[in-house]
Image 1 (tube, rainbow, N blue to C red):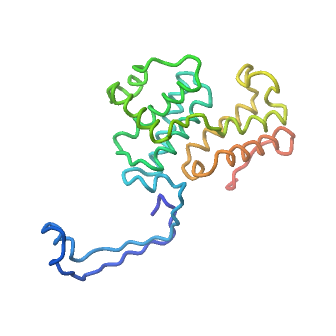
Image 2: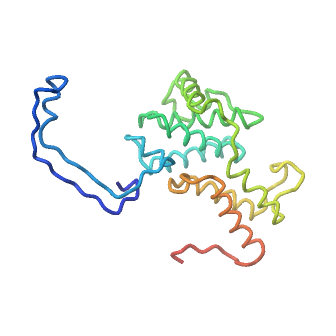
Image 3: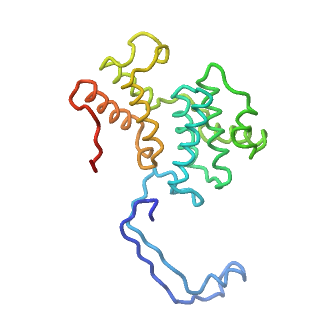
Length: 238
């Protein structure tokens, strides 16, 4: 209920006992006795992919994404690789249950696929195993890659918040019009915008929305700072 953002939780105790003559097997007779009914007022949304994962919660998503961002930084991946990995994980978790002990494997498998799609030079597969402190075998990493590809129907080339932010940055003169976006050093404002994208995707309520919404929000804040409408961005709490 907490993960789903419920404001009301009700528990009903039923002491009724039902007959056991028509159950499918003798072991099911124990389930015909008293039980608990639990209700909360949170609405289920198709985008709420962790609602389908009984062993996972929102905090785990944040921890995994933070760790993947550190891995990306150490390997000097371009921003799009991490955001693609985020998209792969989100789409995989929408339809495929996964055990908690395999969540890190899913993350590193998604990042590995994103690198193969996006990076010019990618690390050796064993480097990905090493960064997981050798918690998994190479065969397990190869297997999760196959599972991700199957769940995604091989659809790896998708727009990311990074892609959708670039036109907004170009419009305010913070990204080159003709050169490859990563060909020049980022300005301070562009670095701030890219950082905001990463922080946004680390928060589960944000990642439930389309990436274009996050990109537009960050781009709007960047434009306000660029044009001098505001010198700083202040949160609701001051």
